[in-house]
Each structure stands twice: as C-alpha cells, then as structure tokens.
Picture (cartoon, rainbow over the protein chains, first blue to last red):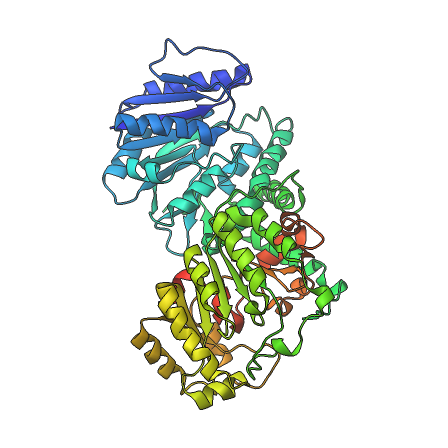
Length: 250
Length: 340
C-alpha cells in the first residue's frame, strides 16, 4: 500500500553513513513500508545495499533529484502503491513516521502531506533552522489549515497526485524542485500537515564555527532557484505563507 | 509612445531595502524565546536575508512553467480616433518601430513560459502581415494568441487563416447603435465594421470575443452590447475605463470601488513590449517609481537577460502588493476572470 522513495547522490563516507542511518530508522518503523526505493543518481562513491531490504536503482547518468524521484515514482505507480512517501538520505525517521503519514493520507481528502522536520544536530546553526523553519514547510495563511509547500524530505503523495504531478526534471539540483511541485499540485489539490509525522534532518554541521560555510552555501543554493520559481509561479505566489516551527504547529 | 525616463528615480530605493529587511526580521525575532539567542539568531537571519537579496547566481533559469503573458503593443497608430483613448494621437515614428524579427526572437525565447501572447495597440491590423507572422510562429510554438482589434481591417483571407491557427480575436465594441458607435470611434466606421464582425463570427465561431469599455459615456450602451453578443452567441467581457492620456471620458465607478474588488493585481505575470521594443512588466508601469524606466529593449538585448536583471526582480516584488485602479484592465486580471 505504501512505499518510500529516497533519491541519493553519495559523494563521501559521511553521505554513506547517513544513508545507512536512515535505513536503520526505516527498519525500526512501527508500520512496515512495503517497498523502499533507493535511487542512486550516478554517485561517485560506489557502495552496495545487498544486505538491506530495499530496491536499489542505480542510474547511469546524473540527472538531479527530480529525475531520480520520477524514476521511482514510475516504478511505484506501476506496482500499484497507493501512497508514495519521500525522504532524503540525510534524514532520520521517527519510528512512527510512516504510520502517521499513511494514516493521515488514508483519513483525509488531502492529496499530499508534509510532516514536521527537526534538526538532528545541536549547534547554533541547527537551532537556527528549527526556529526559522528552513525545511519544515510553510502554512498557507491566513487559515493555517493546509500547506503552501512542503520540502520533499518529509513529504507524501497519493498515487493519483504523483501520476498527475511528477517532479520537473529541469531542476538540476536539490533546490526549488519541491517548491515547484507543490505550487503546481496546489493548482488542483491541497497539501495537509501532519505534525506527528516527525523526522530529523542532518545538516552536517560539526560545530557552529566550521559549519558556517556550509550554512551560507545552503542558502546560496536555495537562492539559485528562487528567481526561477518567482517568475514561473507569480500567480500562485500571491498567497501569503509562514514557515512552520514549534510555536505555530497548530 | 515616447517615454520620458528619469534614470535616478528608477534606481532601487534605500527605503525598499529597509522595509524588506524589517518585514523579514521582526516576525522572525518574535519566534525566539530565549533572550541569549536573540542576537545570534537575528544575525543569522540577516545573513540569510542578505544572501537572498544580493547573492548573484551564475545563471537564472527559466524552466517553462506557463504562467506568463507576453503582450505586444505592436503600434500606437490607429485608423479610429476614439475619444476614450489617447494612444492613437502619438503614433511612433517609422524609424522607432521594432523590427518584427526582434519580436519573433523574443517569442521564441519565452515560449516555454507563455500561456498566451496578446497583440494590442493602437490598431494591430495596421501591421497585418506582422500579425500573421506572429500568429504562425505562435502556432508553431504552441502558444495561444489573442489579437485585440477595432475590426476595420478584417478580411476573409485573414480570418480564414486565423481560424486555422486556432487563435482568439477580440473586437472592441462600445455600442451597437450607429450614432453612438460613430461618436465613440471618432470615425464613421459602423457600416464598415458591423458586416466584418458578422463575417468574423461566421468564420471564427467561438474564437471571436467582444470587449467593451465601461465609462459614464458608454454606461447606457454596454448592456445593449452584452445583449447583442448574447443574441449572436459571442463571449463578452467588460473592462472598466482607464485613462490612456486622452482624458475625454470619465470613470463610472470610483477609484475606491476599483481597488476594493477583493482581487489582487495579476500584472506581475505580464511581459509587455512597446512598439519600439521597450520592455516593461505592466503598461501602467509609470505608477511605480522604480518601474518608470523600461527594463530594457528587445531590439538591443536578449529578453531573458532583461527579465533577469535585479531591477526586474525588484519591480516584480513591488507589484506583488500593487493595488491601483489599473488592475481592473483585462491584461492585469487572471485569465479565469475574463470572458465568463
């Protein structure tokens, strides 16, 4: 009934350790995921996942996370899964994450769902992301009853929505492709928020000093997609939104 | 139209930056409960804000999300002399008229992003050959086209090809009585145009639309136009009067009613081209100080390069909260609100 899609581009041992940590958290889920697709986007670091209970799809050519997710979406739709969940290799799932996401999709008329994302690390920079809600999705104002967008690291779609709204493969990096998808999706459907579906995201900051450069690069990357999104979705972007954090969960 | 631009006034204003900064920082700072975290968190937020504001990316891409309308005022010249419109009084000199190749290039560059290309004027069909070239290219590029005309220069050959191309023709009509028509047009064109409208209806069928301008002067006539359109099965749209420099007609509704209609202005979706190739985001751009000067000229620069300038982004941001009466114009409304 449900499956999980993880696009990954493994460059370093740290990335690989993150992936294994994520797979451990998947094994511990209270609701078993029927299929886990790990789509390797032509990673420079070679590794194998034979001892893991996943379908490891290895792409020959690097095409970006949007393309990697679409490859798995095609497989999942062909296999008849009703709910397609998405996360990233540097996330750690709360043990009830899959159950909460699936139950939410089953019990609501929302076509998609986002969960609550917390920082894994404890540095000042991680704390900033928690307060800022950098990867925690955005409420659609003024009602705060549905989401304006949800990052794809903590996201789920019903099969019909995924079939109708695949990721736009022209986004070459992990920046903007999820915002674009949500804005297109919202032209027809609504995205719900399930605060109980928690996961943690590892930004990779060893400490606040050495992580500072990584922090700057993260926002530079997001900026690279913002102008495109701004021009492309002017009409939908009229809606006001507010990033989610602990203080406005409900 | 000759435009008078003041470069100094068109530069990004310091106060825009302050407003933008405070708009981000104040709500964020309210989220920080721990007093010791206030300063470092606000500093980090300021950095994030600065990156979004000033960091230059190597390339800004256009990915083909069809949300933009390209509007080409192909000429100021017109063969009518409508008192409601002052555009025809200032025809562009021949040497300033944009070469059609430049517009075709602009259309090709943008077509992935366009849900529609619209030709307006003046009277577009004074450049009938160019209109047809654009129509053919738009068809090849799979971009729907709309031409707004007074109908005087329509002929069977044009209509037949236009029909084949599948584009929409909008004829501007403010009265269906001969006397009022001729008064509103400033020329005795009723007997010339009426048969052509019927011919257009016959050939174009549902691809024909009628649009009227509602003002004090035309208020009694517009219901009759609507009834006439209904009788002939033609979709109709009413646009509130806007001053184009003629100042001979008067608004029927107040400024307040025009801005308080509950809908935001959709002008940010527009990419507007003047007869000389100047690019603006809205033909009423002079209401915004930063937008008074055009963003560039497609006769001299690539359109995507023009749209990716910092000032273009700044103007888009300002237009996000625009609430002027010109938002009642058809070009500034979302398509779903037109021709109901």
